Amino acid sequence: MFTGIIEGKGRLLERRGSGGGMLYRFEADFDLVQPEEGESISVNGSCLTAYDIDGRRFSVDISPESIARTTLGDLTVGGVVNMERALRLSDRLGGHIVSGHVDCAARVTDITKSGDFTLFTFQLDTKLGRYIIEKGSVAIDGVSLTVNDCAAESFSVSIIPHTLQTTTLGRLKKGTKVNIEVDIIGKYVEKLLFAKGGSPVPPTGGIKPGFLAQHGFL
Image (cartoon, rainbow, N blue to C red; front, side):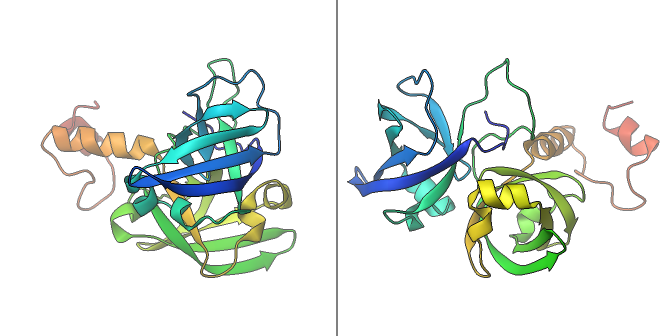
């Protein structure tokens, strides 16, 4: 489990095929204090198992599923990624709950400057659009961000200069693919509503006391 607050960046040192997937070796630009073999590290938002840890360097295995669903398969040697070590119970939850299980890859469709801020718009698969809500949370390449506005197949975020500087988001261009993880809480709520035999959202009129009572929340 992660927070979406990036600890630092990493660089891909080596990549090679391994058992139908890939083996990558990374070097972080921050110290891996008290590392544990087999610990989880988020790499561009994807939860990976670190082993052969040596100083700031470690190896990970990338499964065929991860290659198909994320942008990890597109990384080349020298490529820079966002990194975050797994959340500890004593840590501050500065971002939001991020599982490290990427839902899809999305493309940047527009980048607009607005004073010191930069507005990024992303194209999103329609089936995931229902989990994106205005002022809700989303993880983009592992970075916890607040949704500025959204439509059925797109959404935008406004990013501050600090985030652009300390993560890889400052390198994004139109057409660049990024890893997207929608807010996991929305998925659980939807499944609970389906389990009760109802529709995940009321057909008309918004969420009202009658709808909540029908689904056992009142």
